[in-house]
Length: 286
Image 1 (cartoon, rainbow, N blue to C red):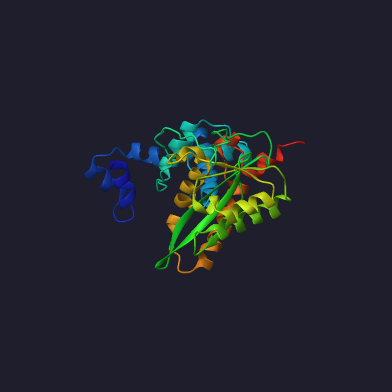
Image 2 (cartoon, rainbow, N blue to C red; image 1 turned 90 degrees about the vertical axis):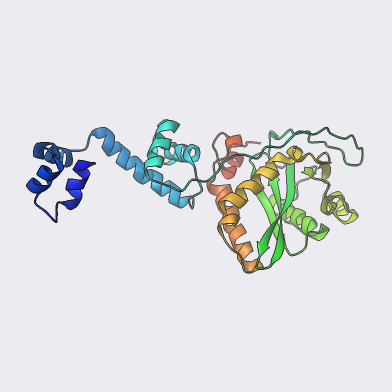
């Protein structure tokens, strides 16, 4: 503390005077501020620069685990997670919660019409085997807009999304059609969702039949059956939507476009062993 005080006031008073008043040995002061940095400190400085680059590119979204993966993948740095935590802490980044959603298990109901064919099997062995979908809402001005997403479980890739002012079957039908166009109209998809009327209506079921989609439904009041979609919305809110105020649907769509591109291309996912959704799909060989 005294050494720092001397260093701060050195332009206003003589060093000899400051050292005498603050009872600091002059040789100690000069040794402390003129000594060369150790190899470890030089490496830490380089790591802080690389961590800052990764953090900025992620738009301040990445925590230590994802930064660690990016350091190894992009900079060839193999360092412990604890060291990343310590270095990140010295850089005073704002803390963001990264707790994954937890759901209280409830007794499932047997229902032939709303059969759960997925049964929490969230890791298919190929793309276009299982898609999951859900809807959330976002304040736009003084009204609500609704966001429907479809995610391919193989790589946790966001393959389609839509924003509308009404949460109805047209929203889900159009999002399914967009996913089909994007993925080349695959057949026999297992499509999992909750039991909302947007997915159980005659209108949506006709669309599902037209695309030869097999529907699967979460048990009533059991959101963990659709945990991947629930988790996606948690991080969408945390990393993008809750950071902004939207005054028009166009602004929300621009934000969703930017996040979707970043999410698929840049965001490591724990279910993919640290790969991004795009990287995970690139590993699949027919």
